[in-house]
Image (cartoon, rainbow, N blue to C red; front, side):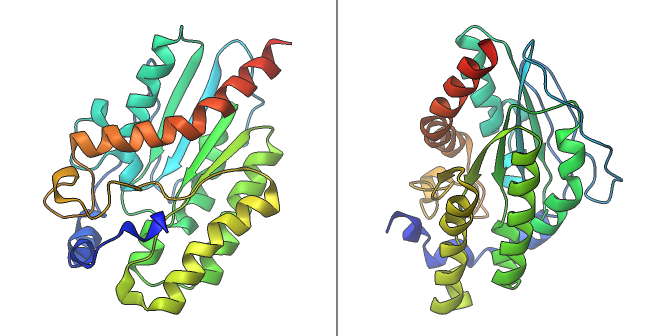
Length: 241
């Protein structure tokens, strides 16, 4: 299974990630800019999206924030470049916060939806897995995020994640299976594994063995775009009618 591309060497750096995860957020929009708040920030009420400038929001952790990279090399920025090349009309919000868990995503969701959202990419869970947090908690939090994002009127893409193999086969299986189950329950688009083809490859990762380097981020952006483009196109058709 492609999600099992994680290699044990990647998770020998788990403690490195735990330390690095405490870093700040990387928050950009291309062509516009929006900053992610700290996960403790009080949320404000979401506003309805408008068709004049469609908004694509990435709710994630350090992988989304682009930890260790210039912000223009983070995969949401690369997605924004693709959208700009198609003629614009989209504002891309990088609401990635390093170290965030799914619980942090629940707390930050209303902020991320403030101003409206046409498409929301939920890319959380990596820190839950590294910390060995209960799969039931992961599932409950992702359920809440996806349900609330969908209820706001946004199309949702859920990006799957993998738990480190040292958490045991039962935990890793239940962790992996949570994502397709949530996507099916809420009838949203699933990207099975955000780091497919990148995780475990030293040539595509920074020295910590976990965060993609520039080339790795490009691979992640390509994988994300393959899943995201049909959702983008469908949203454009819907809001143009």
